[in-house]
Length: 75
Image 1 (cartoon, helix red, strand yellow):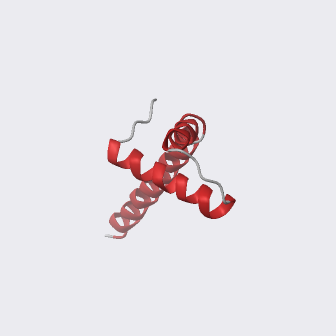
Image 2: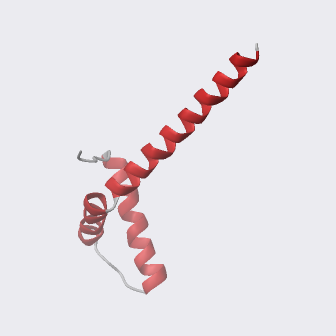
C-alpha cells in the first residue's frame, strides 16, 4: 500500500522537518532535502505505524463489541 499525502500536508511536514533540523541540529536544510527525508520516512516507517494503528483500532472495536455483548447478555 502506498501512502500518499495531500500537497498541503506534505508542505507542512517538510516545514516541520526543516524547523526540526534547524532547532535540534543547528543545520539548515533545503526544501528538497526535507522532501527526501519525508519520502524516506513514508516509505520505510509509515507502513509500520499505519499497521500498528490498524491493530489498535481493531482491538478497540473488539473491546466495544465485547462490552455491547456483555450489556445485552444482562438483559
